[in-house]
Length: 111
Image (cartoon, rainbow, N blue to C red):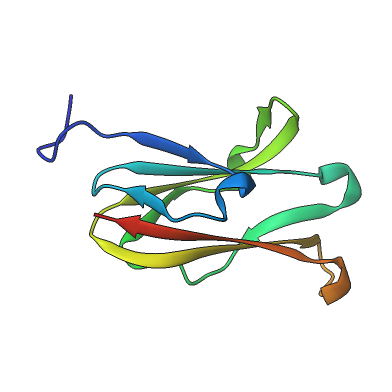
């Protein structure tokens, strides 16, 4: 059953999409899939400053297998229009050594 705003889409993105704006509509679901490396102790974490127009529906507690192995997956629903950044950091659990960390940022626009 569709919403009054039309059919809902699920938009899948990964680190390859970090270089261009992500455009979705109100009501759409944005699924962010980032490669996990549990054997090395590295994990992705979501910056706590999630844009107000997105709500988190699921987090990496829902670890899935991607074609290349394990993946950390977040799901967000767009409930309002706006533009903001979703920021993720990849580092070894419990360590804050900046030389061991990576970051991925998505520019999200909801229309």
